[in-house]
Image 1 (cartoon, helix red, strand yellow):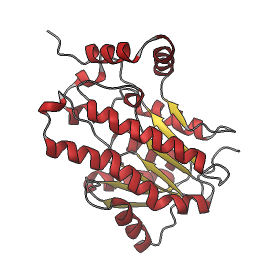
Image 2 (tube, rainbow, N blue to C red; image 1 turned 135 degrees about the horizontal axis):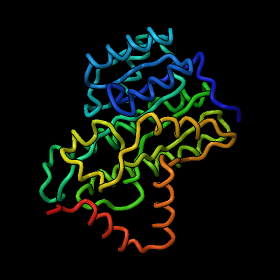
Image 3 (cartoon, rainbow, N blue to C red; image 1 turned 30 degrees about the horizontal axis):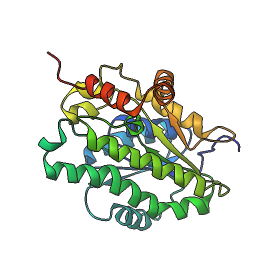
Length: 267
Protein backbone atom coordinates (compact mmCIF):
# COMPACT_ATOMS: atom_id res chain seq x y z
CA UNK A 1 0.00 0.00 0.00
CA UNK A 2 1.31 3.51 -0.78
CA UNK A 3 1.56 6.24 1.84
CA UNK A 4 -1.77 7.80 2.81
CA UNK A 5 -2.79 10.78 0.66
CA UNK A 6 -4.85 13.08 2.89
CA UNK A 7 -5.62 15.64 0.18
CA UNK A 8 -9.35 15.65 -0.49
CA UNK A 9 -10.04 13.81 2.75
CA UNK A 10 -12.10 15.00 5.71
CA UNK A 11 -10.86 13.73 9.08
CA UNK A 12 -12.95 13.81 12.25
CA UNK A 13 -10.86 14.16 15.43
CA UNK A 14 -12.24 13.83 18.95
CA UNK A 15 -10.54 15.42 21.93
CA UNK A 16 -9.17 18.00 19.50
CA UNK A 17 -9.01 20.99 21.85
CA UNK A 18 -5.55 20.12 23.26
CA UNK A 19 -2.79 17.54 23.50
CA UNK A 20 -2.64 14.70 20.99
CA UNK A 21 -5.94 15.68 19.39
CA UNK A 22 -4.71 19.18 18.56
CA UNK A 23 -1.41 17.76 17.32
CA UNK A 24 -3.19 15.27 15.06
CA UNK A 25 -5.15 18.23 13.68
CA UNK A 26 -1.97 20.22 12.97
CA UNK A 27 -0.10 17.36 11.30
CA UNK A 28 -3.07 16.20 9.22
CA UNK A 29 -3.79 19.78 8.17
CA UNK A 30 -0.18 20.07 7.02
CA UNK A 31 -0.79 16.94 4.91
CA UNK A 32 -3.83 18.52 3.27
CA UNK A 33 -6.80 17.00 5.10
CA UNK A 34 -9.93 19.00 5.84
CA UNK A 35 -10.97 18.56 9.47
CA UNK A 36 -13.90 18.24 11.84
CA UNK A 37 -12.71 19.10 15.36
CA UNK A 38 -14.73 17.68 18.26
CA UNK A 39 -14.40 18.47 21.98
CA UNK A 40 -16.28 20.07 24.86
CA UNK A 41 -14.37 23.37 24.85
CA UNK A 42 -15.73 25.23 21.83
CA UNK A 43 -13.58 28.33 22.36
CA UNK A 44 -10.37 26.33 22.02
CA UNK A 45 -11.67 24.53 18.95
CA UNK A 46 -12.53 27.84 17.28
CA UNK A 47 -9.03 29.18 17.96
CA UNK A 48 -7.38 26.04 16.58
CA UNK A 49 -9.65 26.03 13.53
CA UNK A 50 -8.71 29.64 12.72
CA UNK A 51 -5.00 28.79 13.04
CA UNK A 52 -5.26 25.80 10.71
CA UNK A 53 -7.32 27.60 8.09
CA UNK A 54 -4.83 30.48 8.02
CA UNK A 55 -1.72 28.28 7.84
CA UNK A 56 -2.91 25.52 5.51
CA UNK A 57 -5.90 26.83 3.56
CA UNK A 58 -8.09 23.87 4.50
CA UNK A 59 -11.72 23.59 5.54
CA UNK A 60 -12.18 23.16 9.31
CA UNK A 61 -15.51 22.60 11.06
CA UNK A 62 -16.03 22.75 14.82
CA UNK A 63 -18.43 20.54 16.77
CA UNK A 64 -18.71 21.23 20.50
CA UNK A 65 -19.92 18.03 22.16
CA UNK A 66 -19.57 16.14 25.44
CA UNK A 67 -18.89 12.54 24.42
CA UNK A 68 -20.02 11.28 27.82
CA UNK A 69 -23.59 11.88 26.68
CA UNK A 70 -25.75 9.19 25.12
CA UNK A 71 -25.18 7.93 21.56
CA UNK A 72 -22.18 10.11 20.63
CA UNK A 73 -21.60 8.23 17.39
CA UNK A 74 -25.13 8.77 16.14
CA UNK A 75 -25.06 12.40 17.30
CA UNK A 76 -21.79 13.10 15.47
CA UNK A 77 -22.96 11.34 12.32
CA UNK A 78 -26.11 13.48 12.33
CA UNK A 79 -24.05 16.67 12.79
CA UNK A 80 -21.69 15.96 9.90
CA UNK A 81 -24.63 14.98 7.69
CA UNK A 82 -26.26 18.34 8.43
CA UNK A 83 -23.00 20.02 7.43
CA UNK A 84 -22.96 18.01 4.21
CA UNK A 85 -19.58 16.47 4.99
CA UNK A 86 -18.19 13.15 3.78
CA UNK A 87 -15.96 11.78 6.54
CA UNK A 88 -13.13 9.59 5.21
CA UNK A 89 -10.95 9.29 8.35
CA UNK A 90 -11.55 9.26 12.11
CA UNK A 91 -9.17 9.80 15.03
CA UNK A 92 -10.75 8.67 18.33
CA UNK A 93 -8.48 10.54 20.73
CA UNK A 94 -10.80 11.80 23.49
CA UNK A 95 -10.24 10.23 26.88
CA UNK A 96 -9.20 10.83 30.46
CA UNK A 97 -7.98 8.91 33.48
CA UNK A 98 -8.57 8.76 37.22
CA UNK A 99 -5.93 8.00 39.82
CA UNK A 100 -6.16 6.36 43.23
CA UNK A 101 -7.41 3.16 44.86
CA UNK A 102 -10.45 1.83 43.02
CA UNK A 103 -12.45 1.35 46.23
CA UNK A 104 -12.13 5.08 47.00
CA UNK A 105 -13.08 6.35 43.53
CA UNK A 106 -16.21 8.41 42.88
CA UNK A 107 -18.65 6.03 41.13
CA UNK A 108 -20.07 8.84 38.99
CA UNK A 109 -16.59 9.77 37.77
CA UNK A 110 -15.87 6.13 36.93
CA UNK A 111 -19.07 5.92 34.88
CA UNK A 112 -18.02 9.05 33.00
CA UNK A 113 -14.57 7.55 32.36
CA UNK A 114 -16.16 4.42 30.88
CA UNK A 115 -18.51 6.55 28.77
CA UNK A 116 -15.69 8.58 27.20
CA UNK A 117 -12.88 6.02 27.06
CA UNK A 118 -14.91 2.94 26.07
CA UNK A 119 -18.47 3.65 24.99
CA UNK A 120 -17.67 6.70 22.85
CA UNK A 121 -14.77 4.96 21.10
CA UNK A 122 -16.91 1.94 20.22
CA UNK A 123 -19.96 4.02 19.33
CA UNK A 124 -18.10 6.47 17.07
CA UNK A 125 -16.14 3.67 15.42
CA UNK A 126 -19.40 1.84 14.66
CA UNK A 127 -21.15 4.99 13.44
CA UNK A 128 -18.45 5.80 10.87
CA UNK A 129 -16.63 2.60 9.95
CA UNK A 130 -18.93 1.66 7.08
CA UNK A 131 -18.41 5.11 5.58
CA UNK A 132 -14.66 4.77 6.00
CA UNK A 133 -14.59 1.30 4.46
CA UNK A 134 -16.66 2.55 1.51
CA UNK A 135 -14.32 5.51 0.98
CA UNK A 136 -11.44 3.03 1.16
CA UNK A 137 -8.58 5.51 1.37
CA UNK A 138 -8.57 6.87 4.89
CA UNK A 139 -7.68 5.81 8.42
CA UNK A 140 -9.32 4.91 11.71
CA UNK A 141 -7.00 5.59 14.64
CA UNK A 142 -8.10 4.76 18.18
CA UNK A 143 -5.78 6.08 20.88
CA UNK A 144 -5.03 3.40 23.46
CA UNK A 145 -2.08 3.61 25.88
CA UNK A 146 0.91 1.77 27.28
CA UNK A 147 -1.54 1.14 30.13
CA UNK A 148 -3.32 -1.32 27.81
CA UNK A 149 -0.52 -3.88 28.10
CA UNK A 150 -0.75 -4.69 31.82
CA UNK A 151 -2.90 -4.10 34.90
CA UNK A 152 -2.43 -0.66 36.47
CA UNK A 153 -2.79 -0.41 40.25
CA UNK A 154 -4.18 3.02 41.19
CA UNK A 155 -5.31 3.48 37.59
CA UNK A 156 -7.21 0.22 37.41
CA UNK A 157 -10.16 1.42 35.35
CA UNK A 158 -8.06 3.52 32.96
CA UNK A 159 -5.82 0.57 32.13
CA UNK A 160 -8.87 -1.63 31.59
CA UNK A 161 -10.49 0.89 29.22
CA UNK A 162 -7.31 1.11 27.15
CA UNK A 163 -7.02 -2.68 26.99
CA UNK A 164 -10.53 -2.62 25.54
CA UNK A 165 -9.53 -0.02 22.95
CA UNK A 166 -6.45 -2.00 21.95
CA UNK A 167 -8.37 -5.26 21.55
CA UNK A 168 -11.27 -3.68 19.67
CA UNK A 169 -9.04 -1.81 17.27
CA UNK A 170 -6.80 -4.74 16.44
CA UNK A 171 -9.92 -6.80 15.64
CA UNK A 172 -11.21 -4.01 13.37
CA UNK A 173 -7.81 -3.99 11.63
CA UNK A 174 -8.32 -7.61 10.61
CA UNK A 175 -11.97 -7.09 9.65
CA UNK A 176 -11.04 -4.13 7.46
CA UNK A 177 -8.18 -5.72 5.53
CA UNK A 178 -8.74 -5.48 1.79
CA UNK A 179 -11.10 -2.49 2.04
CA UNK A 180 -8.44 0.21 1.72
CA UNK A 181 -9.20 1.49 5.23
CA UNK A 182 -6.14 1.50 7.51
CA UNK A 183 -6.97 0.81 11.17
CA UNK A 184 -4.48 1.50 13.94
CA UNK A 185 -4.38 1.42 17.74
CA UNK A 186 -1.88 4.01 18.97
CA UNK A 187 -0.37 3.39 22.41
CA UNK A 188 1.55 6.35 23.79
CA UNK A 189 3.40 6.29 27.07
CA UNK A 190 3.33 9.28 29.40
CA UNK A 191 3.04 12.34 27.15
CA UNK A 192 3.30 16.08 27.71
CA UNK A 193 -0.43 16.92 27.57
CA UNK A 194 -3.19 18.05 29.95
CA UNK A 195 -3.78 14.42 30.92
CA UNK A 196 -1.96 14.77 34.25
CA UNK A 197 -3.77 18.02 35.06
CA UNK A 198 -7.06 16.14 34.79
CA UNK A 199 -5.74 13.12 36.70
CA UNK A 200 -4.45 15.45 39.41
CA UNK A 201 -0.95 14.02 39.86
CA UNK A 202 2.20 13.25 37.88
CA UNK A 203 2.52 10.03 39.92
CA UNK A 204 0.40 8.51 37.17
CA UNK A 205 3.44 8.78 34.89
CA UNK A 206 5.35 6.32 37.10
CA UNK A 207 8.44 8.50 37.06
CA UNK A 208 8.95 8.14 33.30
CA UNK A 209 10.04 10.94 31.00
CA UNK A 210 7.18 12.69 29.20
CA UNK A 211 7.11 12.30 25.43
CA UNK A 212 6.35 15.08 22.97
CA UNK A 213 2.88 15.03 21.33
CA UNK A 214 4.64 15.85 18.04
CA UNK A 215 6.68 12.65 18.20
CA UNK A 216 3.71 10.51 19.24
CA UNK A 217 1.57 11.66 16.31
CA UNK A 218 4.48 11.27 13.91
CA UNK A 219 4.81 7.67 15.08
CA UNK A 220 1.15 6.99 14.30
CA UNK A 221 1.22 8.60 10.86
CA UNK A 222 4.46 6.84 9.95
CA UNK A 223 2.92 3.48 10.91
CA UNK A 224 -0.11 4.21 8.73
CA UNK A 225 2.18 5.08 5.80
CA UNK A 226 3.90 1.70 5.83
CA UNK A 227 3.46 -0.66 2.88
CA UNK A 228 1.81 -3.12 5.28
CA UNK A 229 0.48 -1.06 8.22
CA UNK A 230 0.38 -2.86 11.60
CA UNK A 231 -2.75 -3.24 13.75
CA UNK A 232 -1.12 -1.31 16.59
CA UNK A 233 1.96 0.72 17.42
CA UNK A 234 3.64 1.76 20.67
CA UNK A 235 5.07 5.27 20.61
CA UNK A 236 8.64 5.53 21.86
CA UNK A 237 11.50 3.11 21.35
CA UNK A 238 12.06 2.56 25.08
CA UNK A 239 8.36 1.88 25.61
CA UNK A 240 8.47 -0.77 22.90
CA UNK A 241 11.58 -2.34 24.41
CA UNK A 242 10.13 -2.41 27.93
CA UNK A 243 6.85 -3.93 26.75
CA UNK A 244 8.68 -6.67 24.86
CA UNK A 245 10.99 -7.45 27.79
CA UNK A 246 8.08 -7.54 30.26
CA UNK A 247 6.24 -10.06 28.10
CA UNK A 248 9.25 -12.30 27.60
CA UNK A 249 11.12 -12.11 30.91
CA UNK A 250 8.60 -11.35 33.67
CA UNK A 251 5.51 -13.03 35.06
CA UNK A 252 2.22 -11.15 35.22
CA UNK A 253 2.60 -11.03 39.00
CA UNK A 254 5.99 -9.33 38.65
CA UNK A 255 4.79 -6.81 36.10
CA UNK A 256 1.74 -5.81 38.15
CA UNK A 257 3.77 -5.40 41.33
CA UNK A 258 6.36 -3.32 39.49
CA UNK A 259 3.71 -0.99 38.10
CA UNK A 260 2.19 -0.75 41.56
CA UNK A 261 5.51 0.32 43.06
CA UNK A 262 6.02 2.97 40.38
CA UNK A 263 2.68 4.64 41.17
CA UNK A 264 2.78 4.17 44.95
CA UNK A 265 2.85 7.09 47.37
CA UNK A 266 6.40 8.25 47.87
CA UNK A 267 7.67 9.56 51.18
